[in-house]
Length: 303
Image (cartoon, rainbow, N blue to C red; front, side):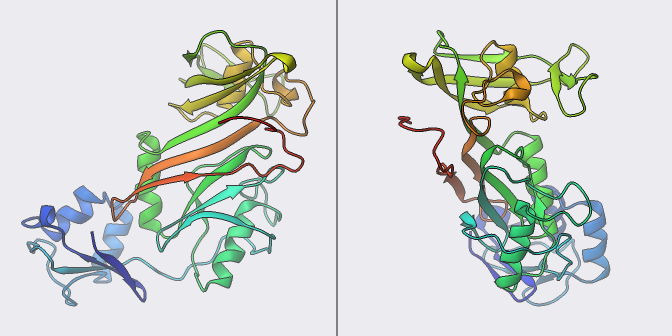
């Protein structure tokens, strides 16, 4: 699908499978543009066909040029802050995927907080002349490393949020856990709720939210009494992998909150791979996030 940015406008060459559809079909059914944004586009004549504002009932023809006013200047929402060696895995006009280092929040948790990945992304945007709100699509814990997606405008954010909710964005994690897991693969299904006795901890609770994690054993380390596992989330609960692996009897190495031993400087959890379909071009995107720890905590691991 041929697309390009032209100033504040996104231009797309109508593909064959859109021929016969109306402008409204594309906005409402293909992109599922949120109601508030639909209203704004309608009021501001923010959609054009071949450079002219047309009724949204107009039928599209193959190779027509459809233009949508997507790239609007916005406040970053967080203070830009230079962070050396921001590790970018993928970037275009619509999204940014960054490899988060350890010991960093994904976004500020209080007004004016600095030192987060969002602050670093705002600085990156500022240096590249991109004046848009910093929108994270998902987050990682302070001490978890790996791939995080940011949307670069409102519509990309809405589409990616919906795809995350439908589990169409696949995130694969690697974790070092205590003990030797005998089975090669499995599924942990156990609802997760807040721990009434601790402000940040979660626990398995029958009254909690549904939570499902799949795991596969990649490597056993008998001398260290550890196992390297690959995990995928079928739901997205706070601390899900950490809670589930602890409940399973194999807490993460370094995760003292859930029973792991502090033999490394953080919980040994890394968002290693992310797979998704591009929200506009349908290109398949797959990003591998290399380990960033120094000294390494996934040392001599064969993946």
